[in-house]
Amino acid sequence: MALITYLTKIHFDFGAIGVIADEMGALGIRRPLVVTDKGVAAAGILETVLAQLPGGSTVTTFDGTPPNPRERDVRGALEVYRSGNCDGVIAVGGGSPIDLGKGVRLLASHDGPLAQYALVEGGVSRIGGNVAPLIAVPTTAGTGSEVGRGAIIVMDDGRKLGVISPHLIPSVAICDPELTIGMPPGLTAATGMDAMAHCIETFIAPAVNPPADAIAADGLHRAAHYIERAVADGTDREARWNMMMASMEGAMAFQKGLGAVHALSHPLGSLTDPILHHGTLNAVLLPPVLRFNRDAIGEKYARLGEIMGLDAGMDPADAIAALNRRIGLPATLSEMGLPMSVLGEMAEQAVKDHCTLSNPRKATADDYRELLNAAMR
Image (cartoon, rainbow, N blue to C red; front, side):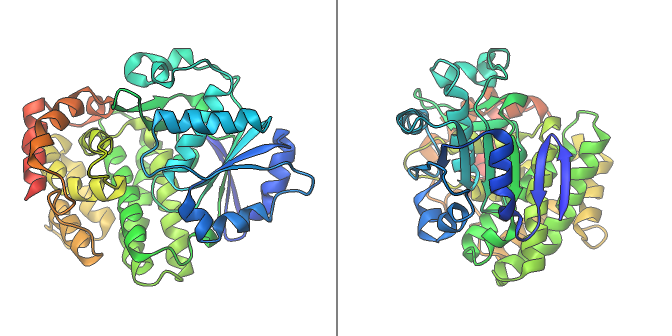
């Protein structure tokens, strides 16, 4: 088992969940709020995790996390945290429960509303280190939120914003690929493409950070070589291990910044009708955004193809579009149910998203409208 101390303390391997009792003791957590969702509970994963908690713990559970957590959901979980006299958070699930858990740990010691702590609202300086301890246990291989410094939340005013601070990085991440065994093919594909999008966007972001580039490149290589195996056979342990590593590595490189894919998927994810999966959005948006950024990326564009193992001269954008088809993901936003009527509003929101600033090529609202049009067909 690898013990990695990079950004935070990470336990990574099959069986890693067995260390959770020791880590709770080290953090002084005796009355945890376990934040999860109903899918994780129904799959029996929550029961597996709870069985590893130390005897004598007073456990309170919040399983009401929706696919795109909202500020009101954070408040609801915070009420449960306070009513249970909790002293820490254990987030079990994909990016949504982990991000919601980050919101709870913040508001347990910081006054609301949550929106004031968003990056675009100048909230970084308002977040202090006196946050509740948080153990993150990912059950999907996609967001990497277990090592990320941000929580993406839909605020009360409808904006999907990033609350970002080094103080929000989980105290401990427990990455056990066993918890992803048997994940359905569709979810495996969507979350896996989320991880790939993170690796690609951080690799091509213009900031100078060679260590982050190296980590993102390694994650992309793993995702490109193992995602189809993981989708085809949910019990493929080697594929599951490598996809969870790719997911974690994509988020390790987040400090370089993301780009136009996420600047678009964040506002699209704030919609309530239709409800759109973040990873699937990223998969559909990647090809047109890569084509938009190609000239600004320079030699890194060809390097993407090398990392992914593509034949010489094959366009990475075309390769990703073909990969989406092979693993059963939709090819367009219209297939996901997105109506043309919202494209203008989504483009305007994308310009204001914090990820716009780290895209390799400056994007205007008109550019985003064109990208959305390209992704619709």
